[in-house]
Image (cartoon, rainbow over all chains, first blue to last red; front, side, top):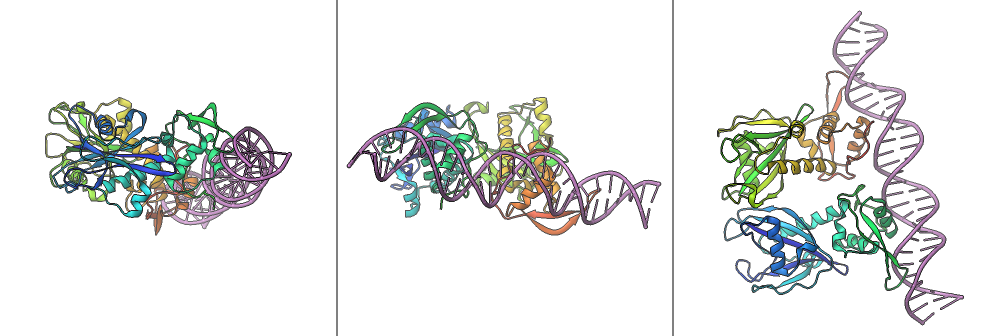
Length: 225
Length: 225
DNA sequence: ACCCCTAAAGGTCACATTGACTTGAACACT
DNA sequence: AGTGTTCAAGTCAATGTGACCTTTAGGGGT
């Protein structure tokens, strides 16, 4: 019984996922998602939070954490039947992970690069990562989780960048603003402003109290040519 | 390591879920979702299919089966740490289940009645059932799974009834038709017809090849007063 | 045959939403 | 002051939506 974590963050305009190079057999040296055995007496979620801290030095209290699903095919681990529960974590621009206690090291990898280079992860982690990516992209449409990628206060441009990076397609700034502000409970203004490096100051917002977006923010069509 | 199943079907205009009365401790006599231990060498999905057959005599090859999630809180089973993977199953008007081999019997229970009477299921199965219900209602919006509740050939009225029963709200027949037929790959005509007890014959359709509905069929607003 | 009832099928119309585009506002820099 | 950049706000045609109406194709009764 293990938990594995697909932890995403934004580095500039690139979507990054946290990987470790395995320091033990099986799959020694191969990149993998961080994870480990669930200890008795802790919930699955607590186990995920503990692994998050032990393997990457990240305090999970700050980021969004949700369950992705269970993966338990008999052949997924050569050591025998190991069922893993995958968790999906999203956070704002997170610091470089500390090395980890074991003989492995943790690092941020660009999702785009992994895909382009055809990197194959240990176990069935490539499959888990693909499921996690699809889940994030879909959740951006129907929930305000995109704000989990932003700091406590953010501009609409920050938020739009999240969508553009995760979806991999440009969005019209004006229409994006209209839809976000028109969706009750998505964001609420803080009153503050932030100066961009150049241009007009942008209003700051914080996450609203909505659990779901209605209407949803669909990714189909609607992009500038 | 167990699997539990939330199996839904339609009986007339009521949404039913398959329950068993437990014949063993713990929770002896209490209603519960069918399920059991995963055997070594089988995938989680295969385990779910096997339990489906053993506990209810239902051939899972005919119905829609998808994973719901893992439930592993330490206190959920008084016997100790048992993690269960919940599966969601949908099928057309299914036959009355055979009694099952153990000392328990399986039966269809109306979801509405369970909710109204505040029935509490064994373990955390009430929570699983609630999650399963929400999942079904949400999936009807974005995928063609509603057809899993229908026979191989069905009328648009059949399909509309599925939505009305699962969502618990009436839908405008004319607008429903327009949206379903306007969504590519949702349904395709078979050419056949079926006579209702009274009224004009209805065209028959079968499930299309679409995996997702675009545009989605949202349940907000849009109902006749 | 005829009329009536019912449900399916198809159409109408006002209104909301959307994507694409344009205009105006608020800064920094030269 | 002039220019460039970004945020903000507005315009407009096309599309989608909800509410409602009309026509069609059966069956049953008289």
